[in-house]
Amino acid sequence: MFETYFVPILIFAVLGLLAGVLLTAASKIFYVKTDERIEQISDALPQANCGACGFAGCSDYANAIVEKGAATNLCKPGGTEVSAKISEILGTEAMSVTPETAVVHCQGNCDAVKTRFTFDGVASCSAAKRLYGGSKSCTYGCLGYGDCVNVCDESAIEIVNGVAEVTGACIACGKCVNVCPNSLISIKPIINHIDVKCSSKDNGKITKQSCSNGCIGCKICEKKCLSDAIKVVDFHAVIDYNKCTGCGTCYEACPTGAITNCED
Image 1 (cartoon, rainbow, N blue to C red):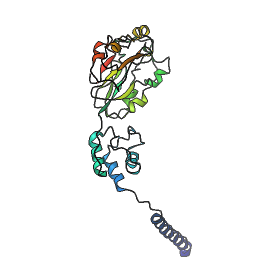
Image 2 (image 1 turned 60 degrees about the vertical axis):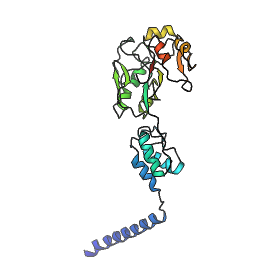
Image 3 (image 1 turned 135 degrees about the vertical axis):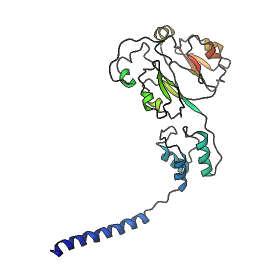
Image 4 (image 1 turned 30 degrees about the vertical axis):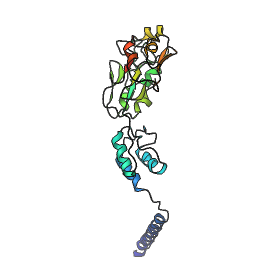
């Protein structure tokens, strides 16, 4: 009876010990030394894992900084403060981060657009877009069901009177940009930035019928611009930010209010 149980137990014990020895030996033979700076940089990052830096997450970005020489100022949520910490770890010159925010290129709120039909499907922008481009009279604008709100971890964006608006402290992670089915959201610098908050591709007459706040392609902004930075292309005002000085002449002259100051 004793031998019946003892021998198998002994065999398993010997095999376990042997496996332990082999694993220990293998771990030492195949050990790859990692740069401790990677972990330090990863700890300094905000762990938002938003991908705004262009990498899969904070750990991937930390590895890219050390192993591939990626710039230290790509973390938008962390800003200049995190960039300075990373530079300190690396012993390099600190790089600044331009403060940015999400901008919704639509002002087609409930007062400006009409409702074509009642949508009673799944309350999401992606679902509404599949049904005739949404229920609003302008099919290019904000659908208003808050897909961007649901994906924002900072509670920085809300639906106000039927349109998404950035109302809180946006960290420019870009999650809302990726989820908007009408591609209405972009990430822009906060300071001295003028934006066309309309995305209609229709001519002025149709746009005016669809939304009272839309860009009608009247070219007043183009004529008023002091730096030749704004042109009307396909019935829509387009700003050349390499020329724009943020003077505000265009948004002051816009008859429909489709052009705004980002800080407004």
